[in-house]
Image (cartoon, rainbow, N blue to C red; front, side, top):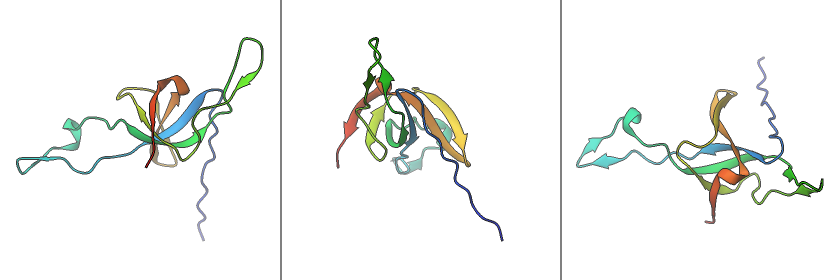
Amino acid sequence: MATSTKTKVTPLQDRLLVKRLEEGEIKRGGIIIPDTAKEKPQEAQVIAAGPGRISDDGTRIPMAVKAGDRILIGKYTGTEVKIDGEDLIIVREDDVLATIEA
């Protein structure tokens, strides 16, 4: 019997582990645009967040976002990683443009 183990990843300092949220297929005039021509989505969901950065005086500055938050990031922001077969991105908190509330 095979068991599935989920890798636990905790970003360090002021980094976030995020997953881009894909938009639905875009159709223009009845033509489906192939994946290679689509732009990278800017909306993402925070999967995990680091504890925050440490200031010059040694105190920890807590993160403004947490796991589960929906955020906007730049199209080419962060470092792409593959964890458990899932495409994710590690970004710094400074790379977050905005939070999205439903």
